Length: 337
Figure 1 (cartoon, rainbow, N blue to C red):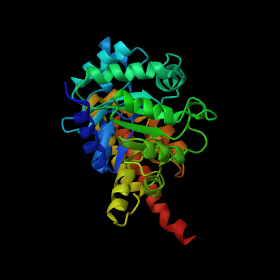
Figure 2: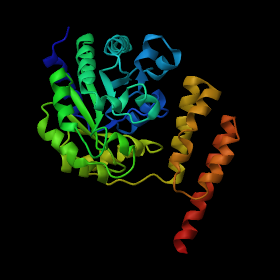
Figure 3: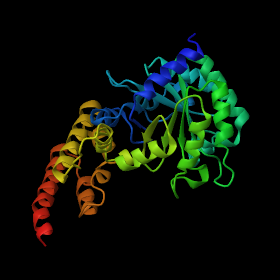
Figure 4: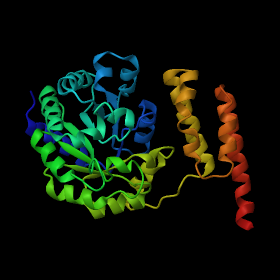
């Protein structure tokens, strides 16, 4: 069994050289999207979170979510659940898939997860959280990391107590989303809380929450001192954020993508999904992404409606390219006006 010191050294190596990390997101961070984000500069990626029971029952959908690319490293698999023994067994099974990290989800605020005492529900049951962490850490040779929120409720944050618990129990890095469970994704993320965790922890701390641009990324780094930054909603329909961050990190100018380039990346994304999962499944997987790529641009609702009526890849690509052509042609006249 690998020593805790060796596991923590490996986690430091992974995160110390990382500019930005792609967050695990249900329905979003499948293998294709992770590989796409990595091609744009994401240094570490996480699979969509999976349930421990799904892993242990050999659920095909669960194992599909844990599918890794051949060269996809470093990458983490995130587990959720409430039974320490089951989570330990699931971690052993996930380890065999070949990730670099096993992550424990103590942050998801979604009702269907919380009602099963998973995700952020564990923020209100610290003895159980400790038991889970200790058993999972003992079960695998990989570094075990954890993602948390600042507390079960906004008025009663307990992130400092949780940080101490996780570190004592053997966690090798902590991601802190600067919101409480009852905030969901509303309000403003509390970056000061992240800074306090950074100050107290002796293991890497990854900051998360309200990062939608390279400016946000830089501010979070400067204001919190976090080891690296995890990008979640800011990456949906916007894998370009990772190249923007890379440019800022290296002091290079950055030109945001125009509509034509965005559409070509959408086509690449669609074709990768189809190549991996077939025409029907690939098209269905892309529906989560289509409108996000062009969010805020003219006539997106109309475009989405047209795309959702199609099941043929060539027809969808033709619609997208027609849209790009129209928007590109319109742009000069709008500037002149």
